[in-house]
Length: 126
Image 1 (tube, helix red, strand yellow):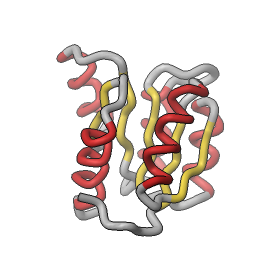
Image 2: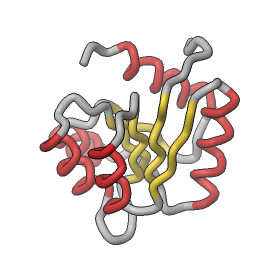
Image 3: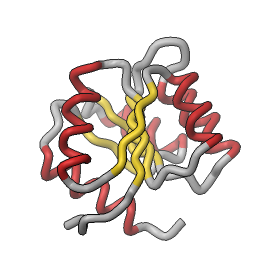
Image 4: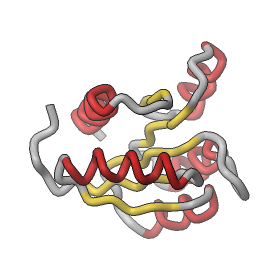
């Protein structure tokens, strides 16, 4: 599993509950967390900072996560983005893959699955 590190993770989610849960899990595992409350803020933060992984809610106000991911990846193609979604439908998986998102995590969050998914994405070569 993930060793204690200084990984910097951007959480892009408009749900305070999701942000709280994700932050707690990540910080307990020695990761630094930054938070974007909407897609526009996520794009701005992703383009001006370097994050090891961006956890991107697909349904956010102002700019949804799919569009935010497309914008980020068009300017920083090596970005590692993991979608946060409540949907397990095959169509959502195809959309995520088509955009170039590295993976996805289904809500509600299982801490072990979250850490496994992050470990898998972080282990990928850029």
